[in-house]
Amino acid sequence: MKSLIGSFVLLAAFLGVSILHQGCATILAGRTNSMVFTSEAEVPAQVFIDDTLVGQAPGKIVFSKQVVQHGSNLEIRAEGYKTQEYLILRKPHPAFVLADFFTGIVPLIVDTSNGNILRPSPRKFDIKLEKED
Image (cartoon, rainbow, N blue to C red):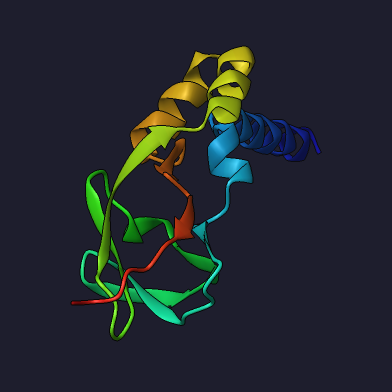
């Protein structure tokens, strides 16, 4: 019986340490990112990140975190219109930085090292398509 209690305490300690070593972004942010595209013209367009089609605009596009890297190129393409290009950077999410800082330095290190604290910037786009000449 004593060894069973010891095993339970060891398991509880292991789980406690595991949970404490997770950052807020790792736990709360999920495995996807999203971007929102709005347009007054309502012209259907395709959205590409680094030459990979990720969705249709206008609307909200949800994609895996691994799709956007720091310095990714986003293109909005519509037939008969000029292609719009944007540079996408990955920046730390302020809420996760603060939450990790107040829960200890280890969660901040974890979220920074695995990249979960970073979010694409910008994330909202107002599409203003211009006709090709």
